[in-house]
Length: 497
Ligand code: SF4
Ligand code: SF4
Image (cartoon, rainbow, N blue to C red; front, top):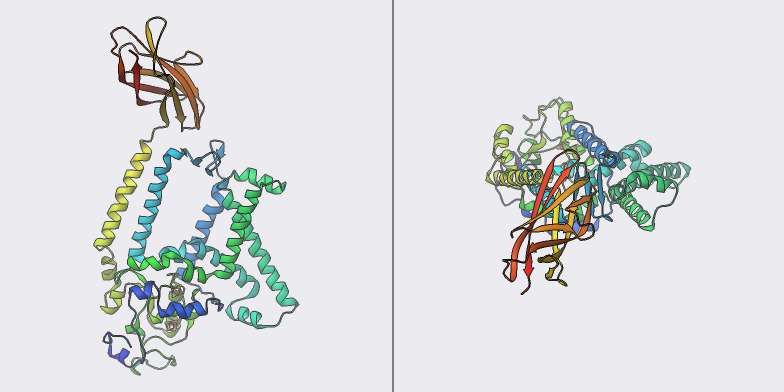
């Protein structure tokens, strides 16, 4: 029994009833539940199909995520693949933006944005990401759809698995695995299409001329998809996903999670539709077990919130159907907070409590990072120079009474248009700068490329005090569309004695 007093007299009549609570033990960490569950890690779950609002949301999310995932690498942008993480060339192309290794900070900020968004959504609505957008859920949904189409729904699948091997079973299993492998293979191909140009990859695949690493990663990712979505399924969410464990620190009694309304539902039990169950002292739960049968992780939400619950809402849809048949109000299982159940809050009261200090803090931090990120991206310069001092030749006097210093300029053009760059130097009177090879002030750098340019900086020797002087090297780039970008770097000019 719970150590809490029952919330209603009805519960007192239910031996062994545990009111649902959001506790650290329930949401993660080692518990006796985990140890028992580990023992039956491979007892197969046969989720029953279900229709309803949340099932439609899950299907919509499958379409949205997969159209993006499979479609994105095929999009072209300025004559190249729109999104390409070219690890070999160390450049990430994201539509009009080219990120270089020096831009790794933008990726770090992007990761921080994703992390805070995850914290925010979890604090507000639990494992919403797991139930609708996580690749494990999405591919399991796709693979289960294929399984249902070929082998039938829950009972048909159980019977098929229990039946001895015969031609029909062999045919059905072979057909299912064939479709699974095609999907898994296409997923693996698409995945590496984000790291190597997908059109060339497709041509290489047709000609069977891919390199060994391309084959390895494609087959590895295909195998992982087939294994995780076809066999591991809920075990990944229950035992392998770290998010299931650390979400406990982000979820509290005000978080909206899939919750069984035990105050309304208990005492549970079968009854005839003609019986007035309230007069008979019964709750709204008819104990049909449909909520358990549709659960992809095989749990009974009536036992309270558990870390294995991925918040998919399948049990909500199933129970609403039962409530409709019984002519009871919907929402015996619903998305709401633990407090809303125990304190009998209305949905609008519970929703207002979503915006508690922790959520507002996450929102504020996320807002600051996103705005800062947008400003940094907008102000990002497409031209960079690094000045490398030639330490072998510190400075020397040359003909014409000039002091000469030699530098190497690493000029990086991160835009996709060629740039005509004019070099100049300042910091000392009558400084001049020219390229060492052509004696020109101008340098041409192709789009998305860099050039190492040796340059010579000269100044009149007269009136110069020996020693080190600070100077600035300036690069002004004019692109073909007439726009101008400039960048300056400090360096030192050495005057010998
Ligand atoms: S589906 Fe609803 S009525 Fe049926 S057992 Fe689950 S909670 Fe009770
Ligand atoms: S308990 Fe309900 S919401 Fe949680 S995983 Fe099972 S079906 Fe999905």
